[in-house]
Length: 279
Image (cartoon, rainbow, N blue to C red; front, side, top):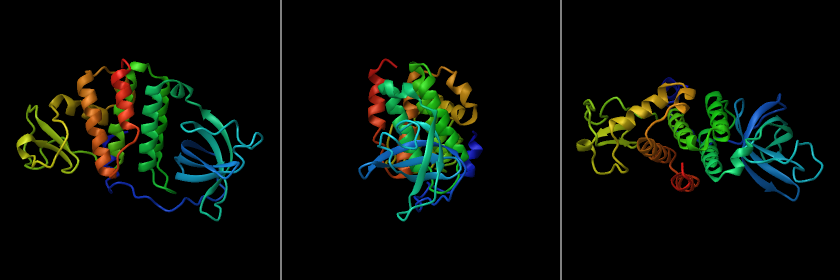
């Protein structure tokens, strides 16, 4: 995934679309992002898929002991599913499912669980309904696998990498090559603003007082550039200093919150777990 992918998506933040209407379709992989009760025995799931984008599907009889699903349905699990025709309420039918990746360790560790919750929360906001999105689906699947398998001390790095790539795919990738207000070079400045409202990096003297958040230095910007340019596996094998990494994660989360015009419920609990969980 490259910065070019982010530029190609520069159409603004994804808008919420109409309910997905997927006719009888071949099996596909689906990451369960949300799951709600629907009546006494059924459930409604929000599925994130490569082929169909975000899909709202009703799983009839999912809460019965005998049903057509392989085990209980669970949030944060990657399934192979078969979807049926849309119902009268605009919901697809989840006809069958089998587990592809359970991501079992995610449910055993608060830090992994909260980071995964943030990933799924952002995925639901970025994935358009009834619109294929190969790159976002692969990013979500890759990150869930990293959160499940990586050593615990690497979780903050995996979460920060996800946020950087999600910003690029959101269509709001920051310009970090210059001051976006005066056009001048950044030099070796230590007091720079990364402003979502302005669309990129600002000299401290060019900020108009409306930009909020911490100042960043060239070290933090270089780390962001690496995350947008280098292969994800290389990033996860690297050892960036903890302070720039934490600062970059805060800045990227604020950037996405501004772009999507909402706050993320999982963000603060995740950061508290990272800070107090010996990570």
